[in-house]
Length: 543
Image (tube, rainbow, N blue to C red; front, side, top):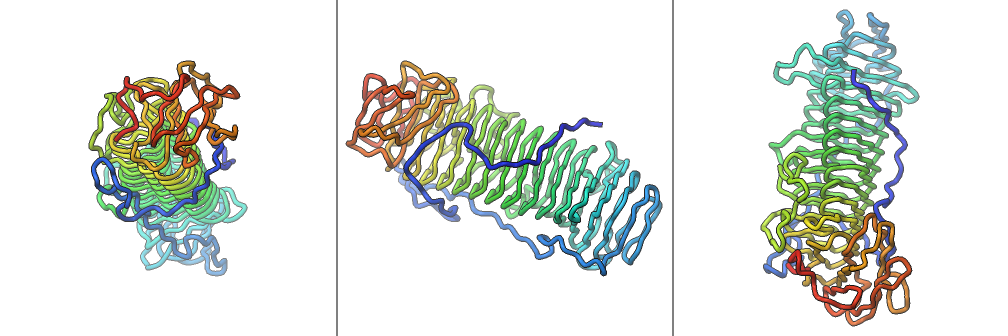
């Protein structure tokens, strides 16, 4: 049996450990656009593409409520190799329990070599209350919801419960053959105030062929492959959830219907340790609240189409790429990430993964200086804070970037084939603050048509890791600062605080490096004073 390492359920608010900043600007988050942006692309005269559209999230009253009526419930006691019933709607065959009608069923005790099968012949919801129950099946799912309008698993307050499947299944070839310790053919909801440990030794931990909703309880899910799977949607409203998976942590699989294949997290505490993607959706991922912590081998959050972060905290301690989708929109929340390749990657579906990326090149211009490609990836930032610590590109858009608010902080690469900011089209900055440190070989600033001014600082005496670089005004007041995670020759500062015609100074620690005057939307400077843009990489802050 696979040895699982312990998971901690102590989830704390995301902290911006990748860097520190001090800004005087405050920008309130705005809602994600559901239509075409009015921001114009100055190089082409066309409007920006539409940003991520919020996905539909719905809960019924019984989804959120862990309350049930004791007098109406069927009581079931698991006694090792036998099962006793007190009430209607259930039947027993050896060590297999069948729930054959809608209603409330309360399970207590231990079933070490058995199975619960839900095969309701009546309309309505089947509520399975785990009241200190352990269910383990040697050759199939421990709980198998074959047929029900909806199944709700309620974790009774103050109880410990376990669901465990075997390492091999008797049936793996039939259509819709089960492949998870808890497997449901219809909608599945988990709620309540108790604790549940699920061990998916064969393949997945918890899977619904329709929607999977989690609205409460303390869940620990271990899976040989994927931990939490909903074919159509996975929705998390509340609860303390920790998953450890050999494959993806949280996943949707519907790739045929654009209205499905969504992951939506609006509350609770979610900790993911994943051997593949932390959160993966064929269509869209939406985070509007809660606390999420991810340690993943591949992408931390991946959506083939769109990713929307509108609130909550997201802390990514390890990933190949931190955030990846065709369109990424950030309107709020606190996001902090560490990536061994690109921090935020805007790519076409099916590209940019650990399996397809070219080692050392990341994305964006593909290591080719001066390329302005026609990719359709777009990054929108309208509020919130995104803090990136990336060995590859910090922000890599195979398309464009449109930023109107929020704070973007990047500790980027040291290799010259990557950059802290890497875009193929435009980086139109009309609001918000950007501080980005990285290599100088392919350095880019926001585009020259931006209404917010940028300063590109090129160091010949390169500051060491741990140094705080900053911009101060003529009175010595610190406006923007960033603690460098590595030694970087290039730092980009951009903020509404930087006014044309006014004087500023760049500092490394408490040492003044150079004074400058803002002369346009993009000002380049080195220790000797205002200078021209770097030529080696061909990137000069122009579209």
